[in-house]
Amino acid sequence: MDKLKIIGQRALHGTVQASGAKNAALPLMAAALLTAEPVLLHNTPQLMDVRTLSKLLRSLGAQVEQQGDALRIDAAAVDHYEASYDLVKTMRASVLVLGPLLARFGQARVSLPGGCAIGARPVDQHIKGLQALGADIVVEHGYIVARVATPSGRLRGAHITTDMVTVTGTENLMMAAALAEGETLIDNAAREPEVVDLACLLRRMGAQIRGEGTSQIRITGVPRLRGATHRIIPDRIEVGTFLCAALATRGDVTVQGADPAHQDALLDKLREAGAQITTGDDWIRLRADALPAGRPRAVSVRTTEYPGFATDMQAQFMAVNCIADGAARITETIFENRFMHVQELVRLGAQIDIDGHTCVVRGVPQLSGANVMATDLRASAGLVVAALAAEGQTLIDRIYHLDRGYDAMEVKLRALGADIERIKTSPGA
Ligand code: UD1
Image 1: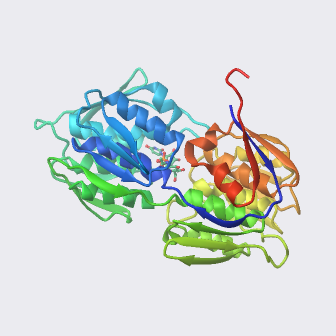
Image 2: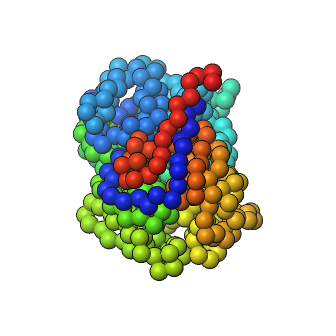
């Protein structure tokens, strides 16, 4: 298991390039199952989660190959319809193959994801929605076993209102509805940019979709979809992580290849904390090298669905608050157990009290490096931000969590002036 060694308190300076969005890449890759023609996805990030889904698509019979910065997926020869527990347990988003397999082949067997570090995360809404579209679904031996039960063998359009806003749930239902007979209306749909990106690819493939980006998505099914070429949107969480790191180290960083329109909630909070933000069409610059108090101001946040403050940015923003002037309340409303980074931040000298879904962070003038453990993907990113700001050396263990979702993070941070090094540990060591 690799570790990251970080010597903190080096202000980050310079320009860094954003990668394609993990949370867009995964549904887009799953969407390639909807057609027998190749789908080419440019700007695909190099990530463990992308490799895991590639492996799953291959196990179904698809061809997946890297062509420069693009991933080419050809699902013409798919002849297996099962996503095994081994794959789904390492990456919950594997459940995204359920809708496409069911819609194109009339059957799918997908393992239930089970619990994960940040909460129970059930998939009941995916199941309920697909049942409304005419699927027969039973859960047996830990697997969702789904079949299309209509006389025509195709799913049929329906009006679905999800009980809560679910991102991958919305995506699964969009993909299934794209090949269904008739019209589907998804109410209470997720409005995330990644959902919009999926609609954009599906439309290129010949789907008829309206309303993406709002909470009501309308889809008129078509009998078949074709291949397409698409460029994946920038990873707003990676971008946000670099901006938090720039603020925490009082640096001056420009992130290229970003989409400022996707970052409104975060940019507002960063400004409130004292950062100077300027933006262009595809870049964001954050300057924090002349903060009035020499430290960021404490800023409270409450995570909500898009366009609110992203739960995936909560740990990184908390890390900034750890060294801020004043006290902030961080409230997590999306996941029930997403404060596992707190005890590790406390090891770095942070002052944080947890009360249910809220943390009170009292900023300290400086953190001090220590050995800490990554517990999940975004928690690890929060620890990296804190370590970059801390005095002395921090060793972050279990960074395979970070590798799931960040493309060459330590390489990019080093280019910005961070003292950061990956320590490879041989297997069995
Ligand atoms: C996606 C993102 C993840 C992000 C999350 C919230 C991907 C690949 N992952 O995860 O990075 O943190 O959105 O923005 O895009 N829920 C149910 N039943 C369901 C579905 C969801 O109860 O059937 C609950 C979940 O437990 C959670 C909430 O709804 O409390 C939101 O989850 P959801 O939006 O589905 O998260 P993911 O799509 O898994």
